[in-house]
Image 1 (spheres, rainbow, N blue to C red):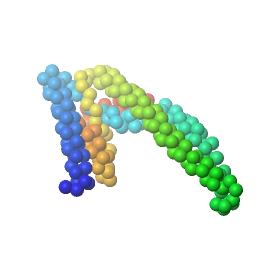
Image 2: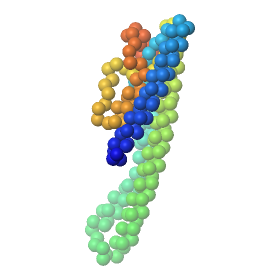
Image 3: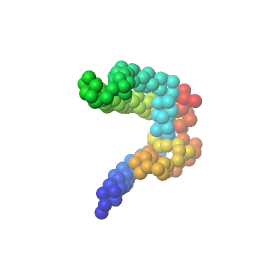
Image 4: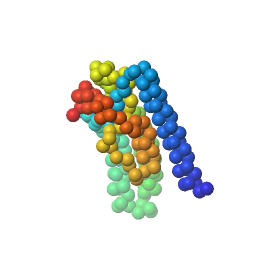
Length: 200
């Protein structure tokens, strides 16, 4: 079996395993609700998290942090550009040319390290925001469900979200985010939660 085929087979195995686990969890919730006479609501939590991340509460701080990271690297970029400008008017035989080439190489390595660190810091910052957004959506869904008389809320995605057919990883992730394949329309409390979160 070729490497690509093995990778695809592994991805599918992981996806199917995760899918079965999520389906089992959702089915267990349904079974528990049925036994206890409880009612179940659905909520497009991933969609609400995306909307929160794009909201005025979360997007500007992330953009500000991104700009701060850029500004930390900017002086090195400017120094590199200055060296490039100097080197353009020199030949390898000119005095100091080799030293400037060495400085340029050091700057490139330093910028590369700083870009990696910046990406890691931005990733951590974004992950914290996503976790906060998820907690807001989860808490709101619980409160709304309680107000409307639901005993359970199962997270799913909006019906209008289409599967991405360009990427195996993306489409598998989207499939795994769909533990509910069918539910009555009036069981979807997404709009109520969106209102509770003051999202447009």
